[in-house]
Image (cartoon, rainbow, N blue to C red):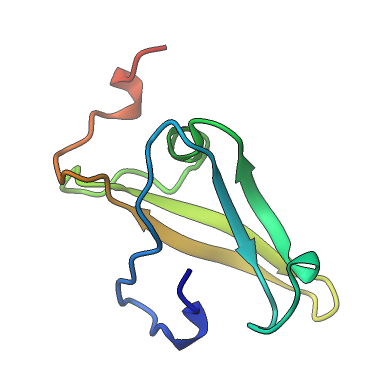
Length: 105
């Protein structure tokens, strides 16, 4: 997993490749050397994790249909700060995705 503290806003950094039916877990640490027990886990889906993130998130589909925006809410209670970590999910191969309304129920 890449250290995102060195990534500039607006740049693209691949986080990984996986199967659509596998789970997704996104962890955030305040400091890169913190233990996993100190991590926030604002996003954890056991199976079909990516489709669940897309379905449940209000980030929206990219204009060209090549992916989806995912907003993960974050908060630091000690500093009274909150916001979102924004991700763009692009499936491979790069082909347009159907709108959520057109997905099977």
